[in-house]
Amino acid sequence: MPIAVGSQAPAFTLKSKTDAGLVDVSLAANLGQKNTVILFFPLAFTGVCTQEMCDITSGLSQYASLGADVIAISVDSPFAQEAWAKQHKIGIRIGSDLNKTVTDAYGVRFPMLAGVGDTSARAAFVVDKNGVVQYAEQTPTPKDLPNFEAIKAVLAGLK
Image (tube, one colour):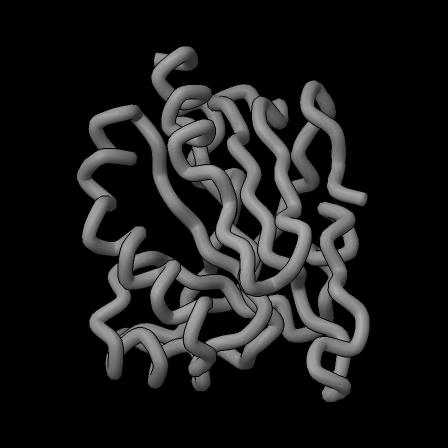
């Protein structure tokens, strides 16, 4: 069960692989400055996840105009995430939750995806500048996408 709207968002610092090497991706970097959309997805190099992140990449300016930063999180290694992002021209910062600590903190672990192991569920959170969860959604199945119109509506109300 995902954490509830109105609760304090769990802090996190994850690793992301860039051309500059491993860098930190953290919620704290946005606190007090901008709202954050956190998108959990099961696995890189899968059809629905690739389409979701490509669509979000093409619409990043919409989120920026709503005063929000987007951070994606999966249980893949930062090296796999980087290769996937480069192959598909994904421009979102992606954090590696290899140990599933952030996935568990947000309550969105998906057990035994396709019989291969636990991953993050597909889920979305809007965290305001003060670190309070303003929107929380875990989709019914990994094939379902979050309600991005509802996410944008919440962001518009936070401006």
